[in-house]
Length: 117
Image (cartoon, rainbow, N blue to C red):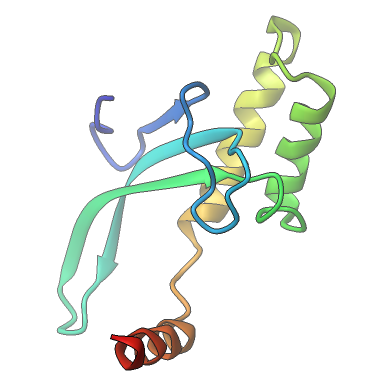
């Protein structure tokens, strides 16, 4: 797979997908895109982010629900739905870009795992 050339590029993968890391359900697509975040020192860090669309974990999120509905009615994503698909994927990726790590949950999990080691 090629990396996105800039922050506006998004690479979509529809085949040879891994299962969702959270629940094990087969993901429907994977998006790869550049992302920048601030580290604890306030420095901008850039990297590659990948997100999968999971029919179980992503249900209930408006942008994901619309994309999941399209997959439900057109599993093969026929040519008639390509423009609709592009718009829905763009909206979903934009929503994923704004998701952030739950620092409190991460700290809880770190404590849990540290205690088990």
